Image (cartoon, rainbow, N blue to C red; front, side, top):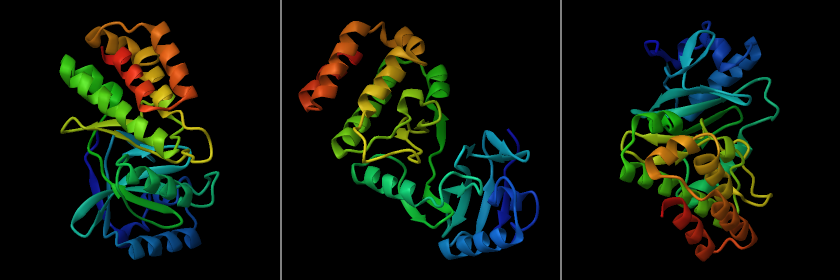
Length: 251
């Protein structure tokens, strides 16, 4: 991993930082506008660090909608999501609204502030779930983390908010340094479609991509029973039906 670099906001007009701020290409007008947005948000500097990269500069993450870096403001570090200039949406307002709804039920990083092109939120320092699972093989520790994930999914389901990406969640589930799991990235979340967070997370954790790793520690789950329990839960998202899913997952 490359050495982190911290750049004061007033120096972000230099390349390659300007092109990251206006990823994937900067224009003078757009750069000027975005620098002003950062000043209004109170961002004093941007720290470039992380496992991903943009123009060979380390960043926390990069996707179809935005680039995520670390921002410095009021003596604290926060996650700063930067809207790509070629994103398929005009602003980050929808994501901010969805994250606010998630925060109400104690899910997701805390939203700090937002503007058209930026989203400031709590910085989660940790590892993506697949990496965490590869290095944490204690049964009770894993059980606690996965139980917490499903409980968060249950709260989202009850709130009527569908994350939308938890069936393929290697970048959307992070476990911090204290062992607390976080659901992140609500850019495709919706409160207009039927929520399926518990079902999506169960498929990912016990049937899909990381199921083999989990089963080595927690033991094999009865997939037929789990699928049937999820089917019943989808019909009626009651606590009783959710507890049934939990019992099959964790015994």
